Image 1: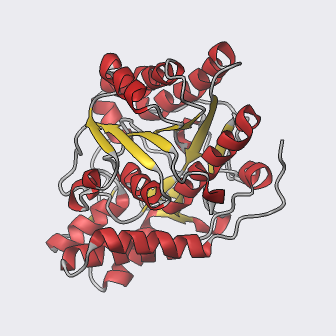
Image 2: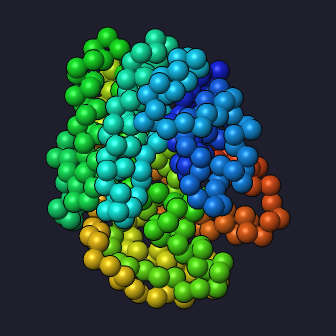
Length: 360
């Protein structure tokens, strides 16, 4: 698994207190890496990071804002990482309508600060910059977007991530000809245990079911590429491995999404959750006029052909694993840190990556 590349490596993760960051921190820890996390305090209650006491299990956890250039640079220089995984962001579409300036400062200027801190840190050899499938100019076409298609975004969150992709490409050409290898990773709608963010379908469903309330759905016909959190994380880790092994040969943008049969409507996902829980009721409620895309899919041929990466779970399997995690959490009868590790081990056992990929 990952050719033991991460064992003993120093890994700097921004956004380690968030949903994806928490899972990535645990996975790298069990791979034998030394993990330093840099992030704001968790902004949800409960939070996976606090509930599983992840800060006590990694090498170092720093509370800091990526807009704080001095603390960020000091933290990275002192830790001397081999690779940076940049996940810190303002990640919510609907919040970006309410906080457009914060969204752009965090996602664009914050990312630039992390790129600069890494450039000033001689130990950094590779950098995986996590963006989103929403970075593309979405024309709601009935096929997946390829990595070479135009960046864009209707809302401020999506457009900020399009800016990050353009900036990353420019930064690579301007400053990294003899520097670290920088790649960007674009993933779709990610689900899994431990996410309690507002205005996300799975957390909204889980909250409503556990409170005995109806599940409110704004856009039941919207189509999204649903995938378990471990799918894109495995892609990030594989991409990081290639950057460490081959350097700038893999310094490019990559999509990490599910197979086409895992592209489901919002209503279908909510109904599956209710089926697995054995309880719940749906209320269709379009509560405002904020624009949300109805159709968004990714083409993942490049990740398969260049990296050998192939998704392992179907959408139904992803939903099942997610519901299983929350059920155990709310029963309070399980060591959730160990349960999470077991889900990672199960996923590792399911991996069926292609051996027929190109070393570029």
